[in-house]
Image (cartoon, rainbow, N blue to C red; front, side, top):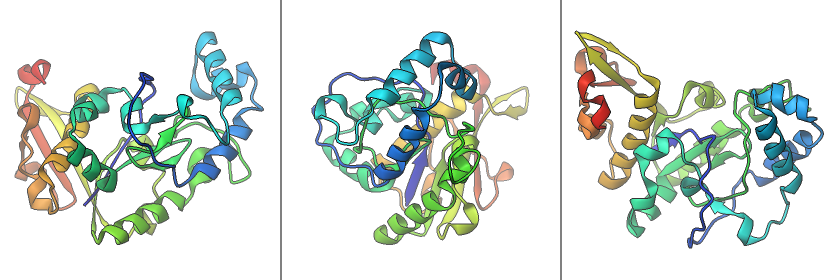
Length: 260
């Protein structure tokens, strides 16, 4: 199966002694960068709701973004992103065999790069998928990527001979994948915290659990939907009564959440 996750706003740019690969949609990314370079500080602040300091940082990042970057400016995507999902994934602790498996089976959706493999080399950036960045293709990034990401997923799923796509991404990012163009069956895990018999999604915990599910798939070489139901990291358990064929719900008692 193929698994998709979201990127993160926060980056960890410590040096990584890892052999990196080239993003497949690098040319598309460069076109976006050239568009973003024309934005003023005020435009950037409004586009991504940034402070003055963050707007300056990202203006400088777009200016420094190179078509042929030197290795010192690059980092492998899965080790560079440092948000809640990546705490659950904990890619730094994957061994060499697991990272090789992840390179084949894990994909990261990106507002700038479209679709990334774990070891694809990225330059520092911030561009959320929900950003209303106008390009020749439309008024936002969803219009920019259109069915391009879905086609890339289809091609990679075909190359892997898999008919299952596990959606561990946020709604913001998976919204850039044109579902009607996808060939694999989409399976979406949902993680809830249960308190007084009332299960509900808590964003921070759900993000971390989605990363943990991706890790579970990688480490256990899960290939069938039934295998996903065995996920029990962080105290979660599959709930058949809450689930549907394409929506697998996992819950855990709320008091245990802090121990995740």
